[in-house]
Length: 158
Image 1 (cartoon, rainbow, N blue to C red):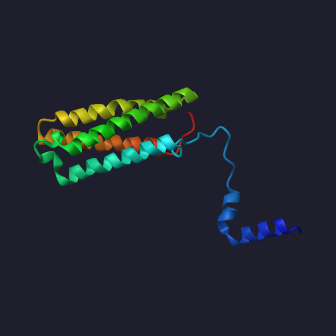
Image 2 (cartoon, rainbow, N blue to C red):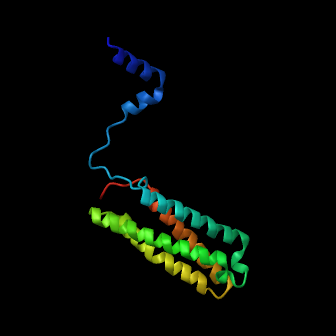
Image 3 (cartoon, rainbow, N blue to C red):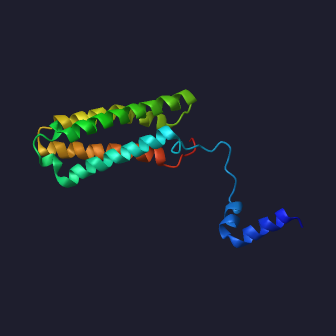
C-alpha cells in the first residue's frame, strides 16, 4: 500500500465530514451558479444590509415622528448611499444581461435599482408621520429583498 493511499484512508477514518462529503453526489454541470460570492454582488449585499440597518434604526428611534426628518444630514447621506446602491444594482443587471443569463435575478436587480430612488423620494415627500412610517417600512422590505435575491440559493430553470 502506498503512503498516499494510507494517508487518505486515515484522514477519512479520522474525520467523518470527509466521508460524508465524499458520499455526496457530484454537482450537475448544468446546475445554476450563484453570483453571491462575486465582488460586485457581495458589495450590493453589504451595502443593502447596511442601509437596511440604518432604516431599521430610524424606525426603532422613532425618527419618522420628527419634523424635518428628511432635511437632515443623516438623510442626505442616506440618499446618496441609496443612489449608489441603485447604480450598483443596475450594473449587476447589465452584467447578468451581458452574460446571457436568462434568470429572474437580472430582472429583479433592474426593478430594485428603479425602486430604490422611488422609495427614497416617497420618504422625502412624506407629509405625515404615518406616511413616513409606511415609506420606512417599504424601504426595509426593498433593501431586505435586495439581499435575499442575491444570497438565495440558485434554483434550476423550470
